[in-house]
Image (cartoon, rainbow, N blue to C red; front, top):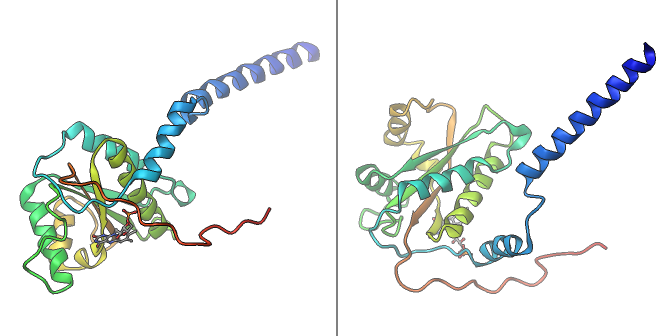
Length: 212
Ligand SMILES: Cc1cc2nc3c(=O)[nH]c(=O)nc-3n(C[C@H](O)[C@H](O)[C@H](O)COP(=O)(O)O)c2cc1C
């Protein structure tokens, strides 16, 4: 009887192990081929901040995919403190631009450089003490995913100040978001690049220190 139980236990363990392998293979990308790896590296190295856009709004499916990439950023203790407010509505986009410009006392310019879409990242300060880092990583994913999907993007700052204003808070409340908990991290503007694609500035010396 004891022996049979042991055999059963081993069989179950082996079955579970094989399930884990399948899940890993499906979800981790461990089987990435060289072309896929090179594409990822290339996207990371060639993403630049774009500051000139056409008016054309990218397809909703593409914007959704970019948002999805944002939601897969790592977060402290997997608390998923950040949220993304995806703004494709022109009137709200313009309002956010005006609020953003007002932070540095301007009413005659568009800090979103004409980009038709803005993905605002905010983070719940009560969800995890890493909320700021979590939100920044979401921003990074959005910027890189936009580039991977052939769109221009740029981190535009002052989301914190905008969502401290009554008008900013009202936008959150309209979406059912608790405006007392969320702090703005950044605005990821999106659209089709107009004109030349920017070049990377040289990297500074001693960016990386090795301890081998
Ligand atoms: C935290 C942060 C805030 C930024 N804020 C702005 C901004 O308000 N306006 C802007 O034009 N670019 C902004 N940028 C973009 C940087 O200027 C840009 O990343 C930098 O010049 C390097 O260029 P690259 O992104 O093309 O490599 C910001 C970037 C970061 C990371």
